[in-house]
Length: 174
Image (cartoon, rainbow, N blue to C red; front, side, top):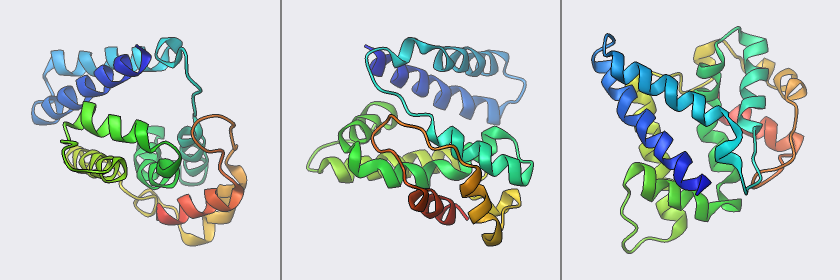
């Protein structure tokens, strides 16, 4: 049930965000984004599963070095992070692709389906004008080691990152 709730919230955010970009005065679209965010941050959608806030830890560390907003740092690090953990949670990423992004599973492996889902997510993020790399937020290659040191590594999720993997994700986020 909690996966279906999370997917429904994400689909709602996708629809509403595109409407809000098209018409910033669309009260219903903006209120649906806020309502979905409220539900996404309560613990109901985490019931029955191990959660992972690692992408937030990466984003917070980038924000400490760049002064960028948390949402923009999340956008900039999320795809490299998801691609790093994808082999450990490929079935869930494949489900995400099918249920949220409408990617057809016909004739595809779970890995291909998952990658197509991340590509659809990237396309959506670009339509919204989100930061797609930490360089655009002010990060430099010279900052990577410090940002990695500032990243709190959390247990949980599909894979607990090593410090070297944190550096890899951050480098791929440049």
